[in-house]
Length: 247
Ligand code: HEM
Image (cartoon, rainbow, N blue to C red; front, side):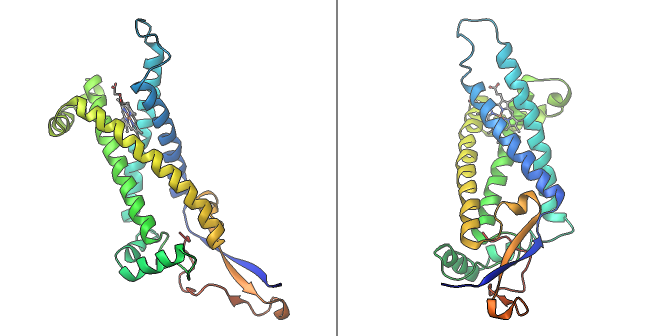
């Protein structure tokens, strides 16, 4: 039986604003999926009833959360490209390197360590980029639906671009239908995302979800018992990139 002591090296990965955006977005998306499906099928109101107050309140909550998502999507896009820390942007190096993809796929099969120039692995970055594009699509179609109901204020401001989007998508019914269909992308994403967070914590022992809560992640450093902790032996092969997340 091995008697190695495992120490953990702690690295600061995600700033407060990035963590705040993550949880605001998670909260908004959860609420948007629930209220969105209710708007699509308002089962609490009898079909022949004139009382549509429930539907009105649910739509109100949907729109408030929708504007939260619009704001977070804009802030997050800005931070990705222009934040002082380049930890996210560095992941692009892995996403465009075939070598990194091979390393990453091998790591998924328990062979070696994943490549990490930045915060994310190549597949992770591509999936996050995809879901961010889906979020932009939901914001654009959501604002188009909004502008078609509220003609004054902000709705009025969006009227002209909304008209263009409606025309480009072949009518308002299509805008609504695509807004509904793409909702499923978020449901599938969240299921896989949560699974991968747990799997990564087990596979790489890096503290998993800790990075998006406290900001820190952890990398095991093996210390042989006989060294009495004086001579740590690095367990990982990629010592130069200490500030990474392991999936
Ligand atoms: C991940 C984000 C979002 C999800 C999952 C989502 C989901 C949905 C769903 C499922 C519907 C019902 C469509 C139907 O009638 O079949 C809906 C309607 C609607 N959404 Fe969203 N939505 C999101 C973002 C947004 C955003 C950012 C806005 C803009 C503020 C928005 C504004 C609206 C409006 C105004 C409606 C009502 C359409 C109507 O009255 O028929 N949504 N949403």
